[in-house]
Length: 201
Image 1 (cartoon, one colour):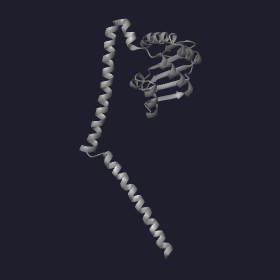
Image 2 (tube, rainbow, N blue to C red):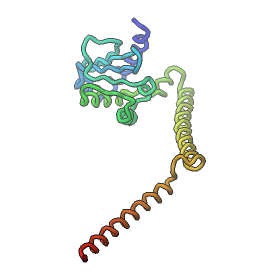
Image 3 (spheres, one colour):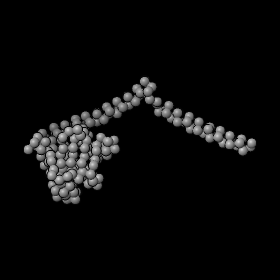
Image 4 (cartoon, rainbow, N blue to C red):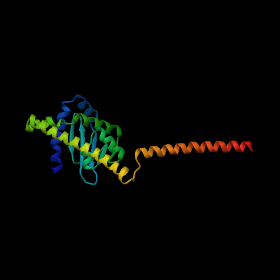
């Protein structure tokens, strides 16, 4: 057994436990029975195969059957995937999807049912209070990262618009559009006047 399979084994155990606790997940598993989904890390040989068999999800590093769906992306993109981010990642090209689109959609739905409650899992290892504190800290870090990204974007935009003047401000863009509209109307009026003068001659 290689190192990746050692990592995949407890993940599969956790996912299968969650399948057994969710009726919709069990029904989706039955519906997807026989499906193979390959998840590949871009620019590496790393790959994991989700092999769905009745009410069980197996994880392996290879498959004798050709995958029905192939998902390929960077390690960061794959690790941070959820329903909304995966749609965005597919649109911007950071996540490549090939194969049966309907099966891919059903598989995404199954994964959403199987998301583990991290605090719940940690509480069995380190206790409720410590797990809750860790959860609070991690949520704070995620929120800080989101806020920092938003602030950095605003600062970059302000620098480009106000300091370096490389990018026009919203007001300048609106004013430019307004001036183009006025010019277009003036040209149309001038054209109509020229046409009337021609008719008079």
